[in-house]
Length: 443
Image (cartoon, rainbow, N blue to C red; front, side, top):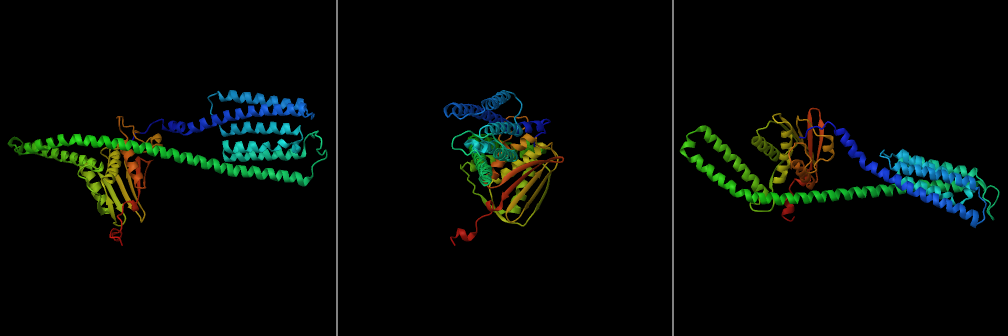
């Protein structure tokens, strides 16, 4: 089907991690911006409390901590300019520094009696949005530890009206319990909301991709119907010429020439059938309606017709009871495209085809003995023009097959096996079976 690329593992790794790398780098830049805001906010708060409110603070210790935070943030900003990937552990390390500096500032300014004690919840909220779940709980543990430590050890805040003695144990325990509950609820529900938003964005991205693919199919249909109109006349002319040749004495008397003319007539008839099918699918003339048949008859007939026109060898087996179904051109072409790809991957080798079904689902597996799919192709199966066959415009067969299966509520999947590749078509039988006759009669 598609040749195996020697560096496919590297390509897959780069493709799979590039969005995460970009997101982590942007998150690191956001943390740097937030940290500058924290540095400015802490500086203004310390100066306002010391000089406007006339509350004495240990300025040397608190400004030293602030300088450490500013230097760390400068180093983080320089880190964002490096090409090295940013990982969750690095983001967690930076946020733990923020927690430590905040705990140090609160230690020198009243500890649990400081109204800014609940700024730890901001750290937990940011971690919930930016980090993966194990790192978030590590952040919660660090914040709870800092909060609990500040309830026991801190410099008293010389503020009028504030009790100088230690706070009651029950009150401190209530504060700690409140903080733990708030942190846990933040992690659980903010995490769920963020996950729901990510799932919504992924669903919207898939819908946009689906719309682009369907628009691409419409454009191809218009081009195909136009080409079919143009091909009708030359094919009819060739059929007439070959019919005349078959009746001429020089050709009729030569068995080899007569066989070649008959073969050309068969191929022209096949081309006319293909053109007729294109026009029928486009809603033009010769609009053959979908026909009622059986599952055994459809599979056997489709595979036999494909095998006779390609001169290929099929190892074909089916398992399941015969059922009435509705067949159309698109369904036959979908199976034909999969078989054509398999034949191109391993020309001359027999193809293994297995069909099985239960009450709900039809599964058709086609296995070849070719080199298999590159890993990067497997991740983008069904994307138009994704092919390694070395010719422009290839890769449309799987693209059309995937979209036909999707329109029927099914799917097309592929994976590599020992000595080849296997493509699996899964279709719901409800999309293929005709409605009950009594419904048609209005009963």
